[in-house]
Image (cartoon, rainbow, N blue to C red; front, side, top):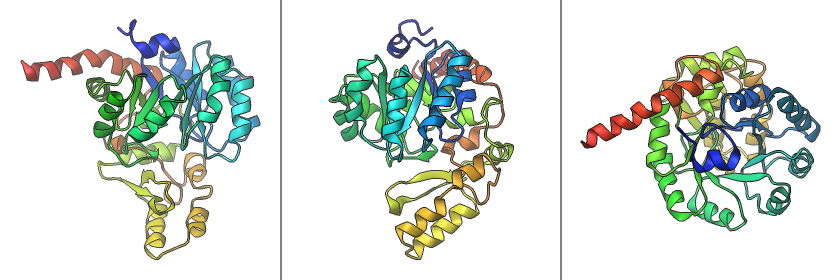
Length: 315
């Protein structure tokens, strides 16, 4: 079906489906499963120390012979060391978030890595295209975790129109209907994070997954706007405390301290009230836990029907 898809051809993958690079839960287990199922699995480096990232890369290399990538958070205190690890390990694909990877692009391109940054605005997308990136991921505010301000439906076609490189659509995509919509808006691939949280291979604590299963359409909120680093999470005791402190004029240092360790508390310790449950707005439509292979096969199987449904409306 996707033999002539530019992203599939560029990366050597079967399906134009990326796994989001999720900190703490975008581990070797999930990344290798997505790659083995025909998509592009990504290790979420987050604030991971370089030695820990190297260990995850070695696991993926042992569990799949398919292309995979690493998502590098440019705000990480270890970013330079992390970039050195991905260079030494010759990681095939690097996606980046929270910044401009321009200074690293020449070295990554020299070893043959494909560089695909996440963008939340047309201006950033244009700036990054000039640095020589291979594609961009246009991610709307519907996404879980760190987000921009523009919705996927508004952002994606504007980025597509502005660039010459391929664009991957992300934010609010969790099934074949979302994939068809992204293609209609000009994307040549999609990225999903929230849907893969509810996979058997994702190592997130059962409490985390159950909280997502119980979520409704309005269960997520955005915290951290006053810090300039907004993040979408499930509404819980932690998010309420954050909102109260922001309203009371808490300092940046106090707000940052509140968030220290909060994601790990939710993902690994299972504290979904006092931890940060990062998830997208589509959490309300996620109702089951399946293997990565089943998730991807369901989307690919249902895609022609989703596209046909749109055509029938126009007939």
